[in-house]
Amino acid sequence: MALLSYSIRRILMLIPVLLGMSIVVFSIIRAIPGDPALTILGEKASAKAIADLREVLGLNNPWYIQYFDYLKQIITGDLGVSLHTGASIAKEIGPYLAATTELTIFSMCFAVFIGVNAGIISAWKQNSWFDYTAMLIALIGVSMPIFWLGLMEQWFFAQELKWLPSVGRDNPRDPVQAITHFYIVDTILAGRWDQFRDVVEHLILPGIALGTIPMAIIARITRSSMLEVMRADYVRTARAKGMAQFGVVYKHALKNAMIPVLTVIGLQTGLLLGGAVLTETIFGWPGVGRYIYTAIGNRDYPVIQSGILVIATIFVLINLLVDLLYAYIDPRIKYR
Image (cartoon, rainbow, N blue to C red; front, side, top):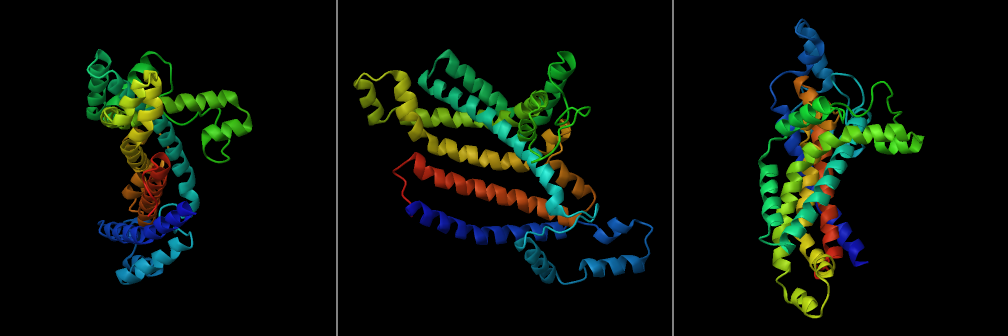
């Protein structure tokens, strides 16, 4: 009951946050130079045609009327219509968002598995060769530009060794039949295990490139948090009772060290959902980052503002989930 009450309060607190985000996004998009009507009709359009289209699109209305019209749309789930393609944004953005989400999940699984375990072992074996090596790799990982790492992966693993594909989500000669637009799920539903392997192979290079920086950050935060927890009295007591070091580390210390690590994981997941433009461009990944980037070039205001708002909403929801997980991981945290 306490969890339900806390969840309801946290969800209600999201309302002003989301309203604030919608105002900021709406204002920034309107500040972009260029006329959407001119973009749609082309440079050779007459002044009357441009004026008529501006009236139809509501661009001649005061900004606050345009904002409330937009707010009424998104409350009803209508994200508007793309000025460039004429398609419903709510339907058009779905496959792109699924592609980015699939890539983000794969990247974060890689980052969490490697980062958390590297941080734990580094703290366990403090000042050992493994500790120094892991932290050096983490420092390099944080400093390494994603575009350079992606290009090196393509050159070495795709071009030289020919182990993995370099671009796309699937084999264009045998495309996946989209059902949910999450290709791993779709290939399982279709029973196409050959396509499943191909989809996973397409995920590896962009997933590693995108997950390298979060992996390095998670490793460093995990090590720092574990070192602090392993100096606690209850950990020394567990050791004094003769408990094996593995049990002390993974059963007692890890759970209490996970609060700052979980915070970083939540933040990095939200950042990857909205910050994968470089990775998606290098690897030809049809994600929401490229979708918004293309819309910026076309001055497609509805797509830009709706895409940014969708990503921001997901980011806020991820942070809500992290808040709810805090109390589960650490019973000392109360629902208030």
